[in-house]
Length: 164
Image 1 (tube, rainbow, N blue to C red):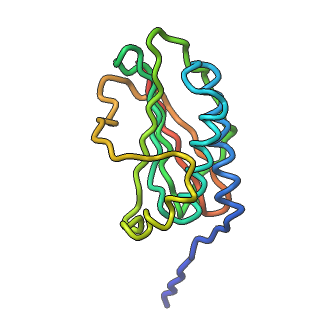
Image 2 (cartoon, one colour):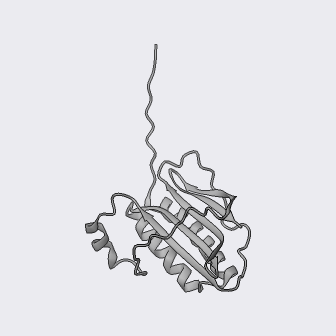
Image 3 (cartoon, rainbow, N blue to C red):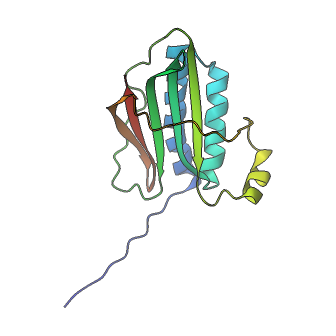
């Protein structure tokens, strides 16, 4: 005798809000410790991340600290819509340094559902005027520095960190 069972991962808008709240806390800490963004800038990025995540358009978010154009630290938040096995951590970790010539770069990647029609429909809901970029976000010049997970039911974001 054999049995087959199928499990379906589910999450709600509240689950997305819970996860994005942790990402928002990370962005606020990064902004504060580096001095490269204001608290309002970090909040605007987090707002757009939440709008895109709730619509199912967000694939990942990458934030990089550059010092005079050279990568110093980076973090990527990969969206996981089947995060049942992901353990949720608290936001934070090691504070990012204040560096000369500091610049924080944020790059978003979108799901295939973010069509040109979806972009047009979403444009008025976003606070940032996002533009295409071809910046390298592989962080090849940095070393992996761990990470953590943020999850609520089946929705999560896996955070990966890099440092010089």
